[in-house]
Image 1 (cartoon, rainbow, N blue to C red):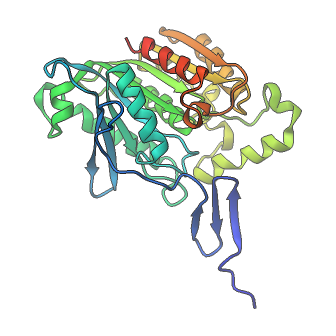
Image 2 (cartoon, rainbow, N blue to C red):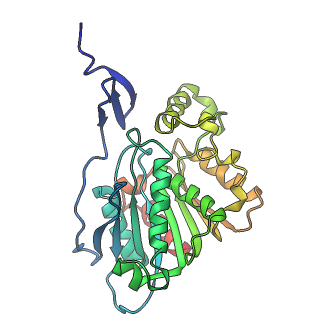
Image 3 (tube, helix red, strand yellow):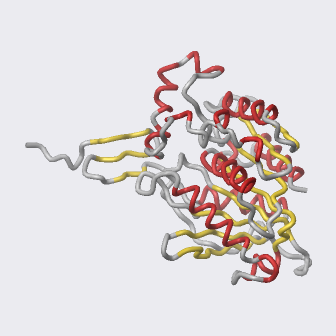
Length: 315
């Protein structure tokens, strides 16, 4: 009888493959780089452990300080990767956040949450919330992380993330709307090509139902406990009765014209605008660009324009 060692139980190309013996093979997003002083931007970074017990950590980024007494806006960043690949320590996100921090002059906490399938959703949400609670411990002089205690302006807090990280940023803002974290004032949420989906096809999805069916497989894989499949309100905000409770003052949605998620991103913008939420809503679209283009081509005109827009959003 042939060995089952190499028999595939599930794969979602080009991201991940799971074998019948339980082995997980991540096909991309596995490289890491250490925290450092970036010679090009002067941005310092360091890694911190949030929970030893649950293996939750974060990478912090501090811009070059001209006035060390000045408080900085605090950005909590959630990396993408379909909930199953990438980390806060990947060169992709390390390089991106070095540029962002230098450009915007903000303090960043980049969340390293546990990933599916070993740790299925909602673990990523729970880990992210644990980091937010840890950050909140530093208000009023508490907490043990010097950079946050000395430099963070807790009256100017922002969430952001791309793809699955954009999904997490949205869901953390929803939770913050009903579970206040004392001392943190969330001003805005910037969602870059956020991973939202749904059972019924929308827009261009209707023209390629086979492609949609392929994407349909990801959410049940990373969140097998979801009782409504791709209409789970965490992946389909249109189905969320709490949508109007977003716990922030403004939202920016960044869309890419050629992104498979484009129509979902526009639908999110429209549905949030009609939900009864009282905040300010903005959207920008990069013409001719695909999903997370700014990570693979960070110096292109549209990537620079998006970084500029993020900077003005966080003023």
